[in-house]
Image (cartoon, rainbow, N blue to C red; front, side):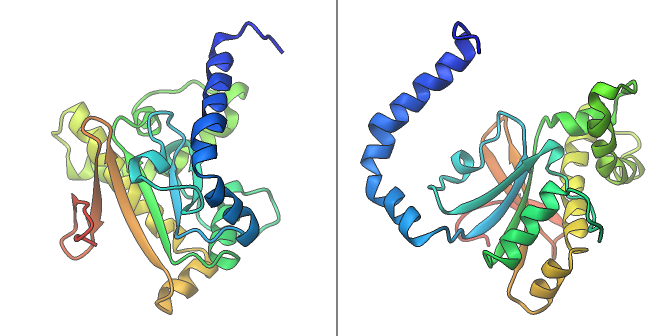
Length: 219
């Protein structure tokens, strides 16, 4: 370890502030989470992007969200094998064990994963898994290009970010535990889009086939 690393030092200082203020102010809440276990309201599948913090943009407190973050907030289709599937495992655990009632797949503007879909990325063993993972956005890219052939680069990427959310919602429905709960009316799926530029979240309305501003009365 390099103690002179200023980046890690700032994170450690942040932890000290958390212990001294936030934790002490909410000590009863944290103790309750230990005693009663976790009972999150929703599974939140978001992007690993450092600018998008699920608990921050939703104003959630510890214990409310079961969070999965990966590159591009992608969901790989269900695959019945015995390989290691991190996102799939989290989905199954949230739905099958924690019995959450809602799943939110939240994309965002200026997404690096979507940006990468429109670049030529040279193959490298250093990013072997990343290159493979980005394939999960290829259908969204193809659809976006077919729908907006004359769009500017910026317009096309923003549209692809939103379209990708819908493809991931389709993918998550390939999970038996998800489909069964959705079909029985015990589980509800939500597609959200967070705009980094203005801090606003919009949600996908399947009846109107468009993203609309999210507020407490809209869903």
